[in-house]
Image (cartoon, rainbow, N blue to C red; front, side):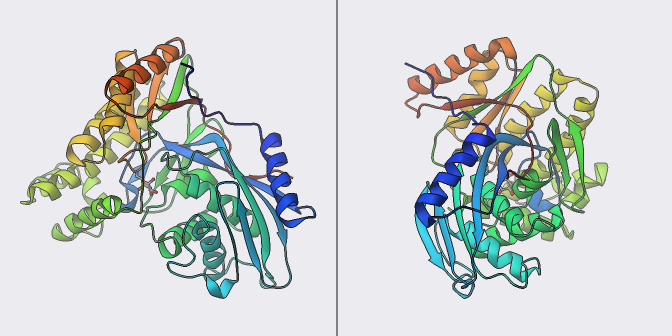
Length: 392
Ligand code: GLA
């Protein structure tokens, strides 16, 4: 059987397909094309909504949007991956529209709410194509949002664009996500992971060019849904734990050494204690990972990735058999470390692995998935790639 890969394609090819879709759907030519990448998070999972630290990279896989302004107020959204949507600004709001169009429509709404949309905005035609797999936990929705946000407000600060995209996702698409994905898509730089401090919004770039090593992404192809309630439950447990401990966010405890740990240990409710422990221990792991990356200690990075996975699996309970299989199989094949990435409950895992071991890791993961009656995974080897950008 041939291995299922999900390849990134060069910008020029994606730009050509987006232009083709635009011509077919609207006639005429787009005035410009913008691209925004998906992401994988190296470490720092389920901490962004607790004011924590995370460390994503941009994928070589992106969404490209071909755009032309209109003057009659109409908004027309097209994608090769979903139903067409036509509407107007006044038809966009909490829960409206639904489906894939809620993300780009939500962006237009949020840009206006946040004062970032041009005063003379008169509607838009937008055609999207993407190589970020949908439902794989690789932030296909953030890539959609960020490509359009940059197209419509190219002069705005990237942090402000990211904030508007988060608003679109939270308030229009009604997915209560943190903010990591949009920061990753807009604020990374090529060859670097983005250290995002979700408490202050500050970012810094950490070099990520692991010599001789590959970053393998395993899309488990297990169904993954952020809107299905489990994500919201985890988020609200983390917020409840903070309230019980009298802090605004668990980040405050993570910054408070032994006292912070003792406070979390004092939580009587076993589930809340384990959820909170994951958060403060994960923030500590991000700090260690940054240090290890800066000094080129990739064995240590690998150990931290696996520790993160175990914490997400045991204490936070967001892993699943498909993700555990990907992690175990790649470790057996010689990965320095591996973990689930993104929200969990399906989606993707990453493995940091000597380049010459990639084939073996792919084979082992496939074989073990088949033995366990799990879906056949898809694979990509990725480098820390470019953030959202204008193509033409
Ligand atoms: C999803 C959310 C992010 C973040 C991760 C978990 O990707 O969109 O905001 O919370 O899950 O780290």
